[in-house]
Amino acid sequence: MANIATITTSNTRKDKVNNRARPERHGQLPMSLFCEMTHGVRKNHLMSDTTPADGTKGPRTFTAFFAETLEHAIERVIEPHEVARDIITRGGAWINHARVRITTAGVLPGMFIAVHTPPAHAHSHILPDDAVIYVDRWLIALNKPAGTYVDATPWDAENHLRNALLNHWYARNGELLHLHPAHRLDRDTTGVLLFSRHSHANSALQRVFVQQRAKKTYVCHVAGWPDWDEILMQTGHGRSDRGRFRVYSIDEVGNALPGGNVVKSMETFYRVVERHPDGTTTMLAWPRTGRTHQIRLHAHALGHPLVGDASYGSGQLGIDAHHLHAWRLSLPHPIHEEPLLLTAPLPDWCSVDLAALSASATILTE
Image: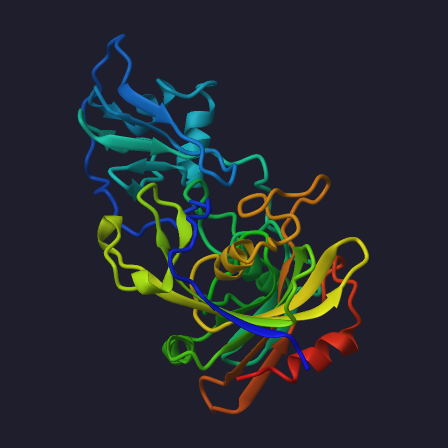
């Protein structure tokens, strides 16, 4: 009989986790605001430079002292000065938490400015010819590559997968799509990524996910050999007072968090598929909730972090991305309700036979 366990955390240890935050949506600064430039030699003050736990370089932030253009304000703190224009036009400049992409936008004394520059791992998002794995009149799905962002980042409003898919489809079919992502995957997570391509399907597709009718199956490669064959992790999820995502105990669900949020429940079911001679294990994971970094956080809390996960594990030399793959996504079609099963090809790091994975996936304990 399979070794099955259930862990419902209470007074769990406070794991160190990632603080990479999603870009916030704010109203845009009125572009009519333009102040007469005042020259001077005193630099803007209160500049800081922070580095998040995941290694992504944090923004350089400062409070404006002069009334001048955004470009000139940034030139005071960024070297070389020529890059200020590129930063702004790319979307890396923010005034009072609103992205501003006009170099001549006005800055007033006391305004808060954040300058985001691309991290070392940033690169152009170009999709391979076989990226699209499903398409119909309403939906389009692709096999997401590692090292890519689904949507705009704080440092770049253009270089992301949604735009890459728009360009990819237009170049091959001459059709301009209107895409809305149904869900998100982390930067280095690969696999099925679903978009609606028609406004009539978007709201219906969002309801499918909100109602938890979309079932996700992930393949993950973790460090160590678990002493169980199946396990259900039930914990809380939220940010710490430092803004980092972390695991909370189940009895803390509903408690208030900094910023006005509360601890939310988080559940993941894991099943061992194969224990490898090198001391690692391939598992399947079924998230029953949709919290940020859920599978990675729970794997770390179990003592078996993902191979290559530098944020929630130690990372491994020579491995550039964590080993997590969104293998299958099943859901009722948002328009006609027929069952839809989307499957992404397995990544190179997965050495388990497809038949063995499929067999394990068909006997999920509900």
